[in-house]
Amino acid sequence: MQTTYIKNFDREQFQKLADIFETVANDKKPLWMGTVYIGEQPIYIECHVKWMADKINSFFANALPGEYVQNAIKLYVFKSTFPDFIPVPNQFEPDVYFTNDNVLRVPDMIVHKHCILLNTNNTFYMNVDHDDLNNFYHLGENHLLMRLFYYMLQNTKMTVVHGAVVGYEDHGVLITGLSGAGKSTLSAFCLSKGLQFIGDDRVALHKENTCLVANPVYSTISVSTDIPNIKAVDVIHPTYSSKNVIVLDKSQLSQNIKINAVIEPIKSQCKHPIIKPTPKNPIITRICKDYSHLSVLSRSTQLIADYKRILDLLCDIDFYTIQLSDSVDDNVTEIINFIKQQRI
Image 1 (spheres, rainbow, N blue to C red):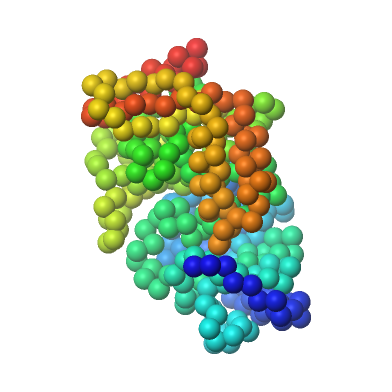
Image 2 (cartoon, one colour; image 1 turned 60 degrees about the horizontal axis):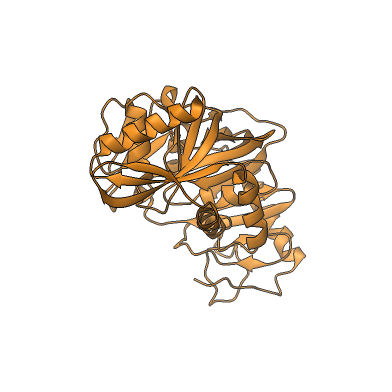
C-alpha cells in the first residue's frame, strides 16, 4: 500500500483529534499501565485493549506494571469509539497515524477497529489494530508495536534490529539474516545448551563507549521445532503460522551482552558447519534495508540517516558467515565454540 499525503489536514484539525484522544486516555482507567524498557529506554504505556494488556507483562523482557518514569516516551493504546474520528476523504483508508507536520500517512497494515496513539515530543502517531485479535500471537512477529518502537527510538541511543543474540560470559554474537535464515532455531538451541540469550527476532542495541551492547525486547521465541531444556511459562499455537511461540521464564534472559561479531547463516550442503570472515558492506546494507522497511509505519523517508545509524553501530564489529550443515547440534556447537574463542 502506497503512502498517501493529505495536504489540507491542518493543525487545528490535528489538535482537535489529539485533544479527543487525550481526554479518553485521562477519563478511562487503563487495563495495564506501567513502563516497558527497550534496552535502557523507558516507554510508559497506558493500554485499554484487553488482548494486549494481557500480554505485556509476560511478553516484554522488562515490564514494570504501575511504574512511571519521568523521561519515558508515552504510548497510549485504546479502542476508538468515535465514528468520525478521522476527518479525511471517503476513499482514504482508516489506518492512519498523525505527525505534527500535518501529514497523514497510510501504513501497509490491514487495520481497523482499534487504535494506537503515540505522543512524544508533541508528535502524535495513530494506528489501528487488526480485527482478528486471536492471531496477534506475537507482538514482535506482527510488527504492531515494533513499527511504533522503531520510530519512537529514532531520537534515542537505542536501536532495535532484526536479529538474534546469544553469548557466553557477557560476550556474544549478533545472528542476522532474513526471515527463515535460521536465527530462531540457532539461538533457541544455544539457550538450551546453556548460553546466554538476549532474543531470537528483535534485539535492542546501543553503543557504550566503543562497545556494542545488546539487550532483550521480548521474552519469547518463535520456533517450528521442539527445543529441549527450556523453561516455558506458556506455549502459544497460532492459527495461521507453522511456528509456536514459547514465552520464556524471564530468568533465562540476559542483559548487557557485548557483541564481538556478526554472523549470518547460509544454508549449504556442508557435512560440517564452517564459520569464516566475510565482507561487511553487503550485510550492513541488508540490515539497513530491513531496518528502514520497519522503522516507520509505512516506509522510512530517512534512508541515508538509517544507514549511518546502522553503520555507526556495526563499524567496529567483525562479520562472518556460517555455512550450515544438516545437523542443528553441529551448527550450535560451532557457534558456541566461536563465541568462546572470541571471548578469550
